[in-house]
Length: 250
Image (cartoon, one colour):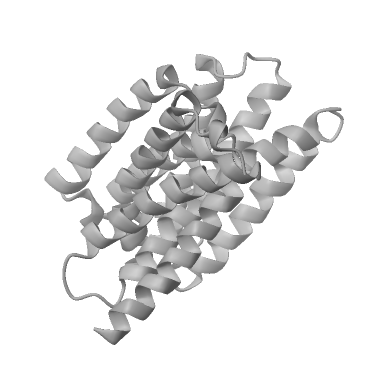
């Protein structure tokens, strides 16, 4: 263990990124679980990633507005398609979501197949690089999330299909570039499962679980020199299991 690795200059932006993702993904995840479309986050995240990989193959600057616009357009297109299929074939929605995920994932592989750094970019898309996040990256995300949360709670957009999918697409597109597909999925689904049996304060419990998991995972990563994203996912799972055992005993 190396206590000197606990550098607030590195861990501070990473923790703030995790808290921002938590702010939107906990309520989104509870709605996803309620609707029974568990893998929509993976599908939308992968579609946004496909947009990013397409922009990268065009030679556009990483983090530039062209790349951001391509990712958002791809995710919004996927969201509109899924909103339409939910109305057209509701009984097949989960299967269609899974198919869309596979198509987007393999599409990204095909786009990067001739790129010598393609494997590295795919890994970064899935696992994320949360420790490389800077405060400058977080300001636009914080503003976007504030608008989305205002629409979510103030406008009750989660009650209508199309606004739900659009808000979901925008939130996922921003978060997947901060923390990667795996952490996006875990932050959405694990707190939602943990709170599913609670009769009250579900949102608060989900926020607490996710916030503590991000903090614990980042500290464990700094001390052990293991990948942060993977440790945060495991922290979410371990804390959810431990919290569930406590809930059952009370």
